[in-house]
Image (tube, rainbow, N blue to C red):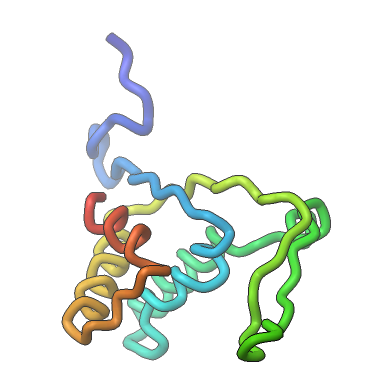
Length: 128
């Protein structure tokens, strides 16, 4: 039986199996940023930037789906709007990136900062 790159676990020196995380547009715009550190040491910030680069919306996606942020008439907070719902994307993460995300979820949990908006993503991260 032939193994694919996705199912191998360090078959060659230095090679890691990538873990996959499905992210909605809301996860990509807001939720992932809640989990990543705002400030930290150089290594953690390089990992954070790598994750954000992988999850960033492209101008093509914004135009294709009519994605925009509009203030709510109720409370003035900005809400995500789109003409067509963008599909979730699958992001490949290495072990160091997964560890950083898990660390962020644990920090949110410790400070009682997990919300109904981000709980699904937090659960998915902890299951990686």
